Length: 208
Image (cartoon, rainbow, N blue to C red; front, top):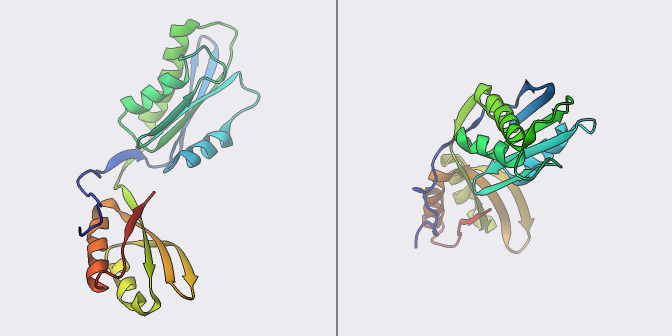
């Protein structure tokens, strides 16, 4: 089948943060510093969160959501009182591809389970609401193995469909192995165009 199973309809634009953003709130003398970032993978989310952890803080609680991938951490707070409320704030604000870290400095007054959940969730929500947002078109990644004699047919098609080359590996026998990315809605069209231009010799296969 043409397009190799690439589906356009399931891929829709989504809202994420336009840039990193931080905010500070105080609840009963405890200070909550929230950091939020746009991110495109779970690994990137983890790196961003690690970059702003404060070892001098009482707790560093976090959550991220990237498509169907999500995680959260209470970092020693009572179970379900920090990470999950932060994740709920991300979901409630309708954003995706977002990581949030909330750093707490204990002020001497215990908040209780309900108070903690409201404080962490509120800190995350306030940070996200005050952050600039942007609509992003989902991107797909395709792998192609192109014999050298067909490069002249394939490369112009990549440009025409707005595909960027992430990597190129050269093999004396097989040709060039390409990893490209482009807007998800254009992936099936590129796959079909490549198949037509090479009489089916080059297959554009979706990859993670």
